[in-house]
Amino acid sequence: MVRALLCALVVFVLVVAAYLFPRLPSHRAMSVGRAGLGPPRFVTREGRPSKLSFEDMLRDDFEFDMRGSDVMVFLHIQKTGGTVFGRHLVRDLALERPCQCLRGRKRCRCARPPSAGGQRSWLFSRYSTGWKCGLHADWTELTACVDHAMDRAEKAPAKRRYFYVTLLREPVARFLSEFRHVQRGATWRGSRHLCGGRAPTADELPLCFNGTDWRDVTFQEFLACPSNLAVNRQTRMLADLTLVGCYNRSGMSEHERDLLLLASARKNLRHTAFFGLTEEQHLSQQLFEATFGLHFVRPFEQLNETRSTAAQGRVPPEDLEAVRRLNHLDVQLYDYARKLMSERLQRLKERGPS
Image 1: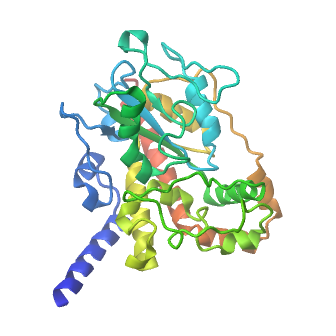
Image 2: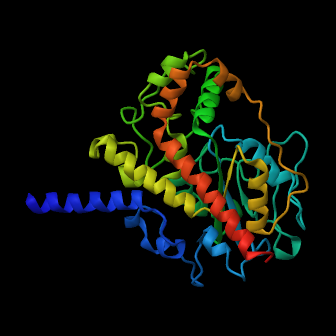
Image 3: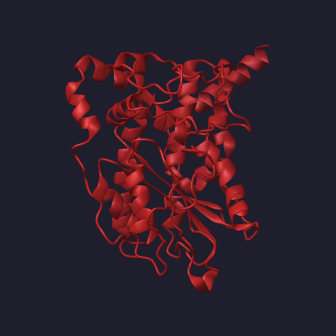
């Protein structure tokens, strides 16, 4: 009994340390593996990492190999501006072989150059491959699914390098935007939420509404549902949910779960090849272009007037504060992301043209 308690205490101390001191150099952090709250460094048979981070891409010899096996994977978090960014990826990149987007079709064909066996895709996203790992698949789902999904789509196994990209948004604005979206009838009921090889049970993840949707939900009802996936959505979708028992909350305290989720989300964010911020469109574009060596043919637009900003003006200050408290993990993750983005931009500036 004493030994078990000591082991539990050691694990908890390690978790707190990872949470408080997250800035390990990425080349070391990636080697920590799953015990270190982050993704293992998957390696191809040639000895190359199959999931590349920003740190890997800073090497002088780095090139996103459009002709080879490199694949960009877009982790699309709801209400972060991902729809617009996803369209930029398929419509606005200056490429040797641009994506083919036909009128009336939701998906574009983003094939590699003809000389590289041009039937294979370099982009895994809603507007290229479709939701092959589930509607708005999160980090846990994507990392378990992408390779198999690509094998099925291309009808053959291949050794690939994956580059994860995502967007984050100021948490209060994002939460209010999702509230308005749900009010209009959105549910994302097609999402699988697969974790540990299975979907959550109805007891683990009960619906917040009866019937087909949550249309016309009041703000207080939206805040009050304990299983509302809008709460701390960005942290949950970036974390490795297997570390906390997936959607089963009985294995640890809420405080322990929160620490693990935030530490994991931070670590996985550091290991993304690129992330942008909805509130920093121009800087996000600069960061993407400098990181990948790819360029957009038109500038990103910073749209200040959105449904969520208009909604904030109609929400009492005490309710806005309640949203911040409820989304405390996302607030901390977003603050961390802003600092990390500044660091990445500074490092690229110091490196100069590659």
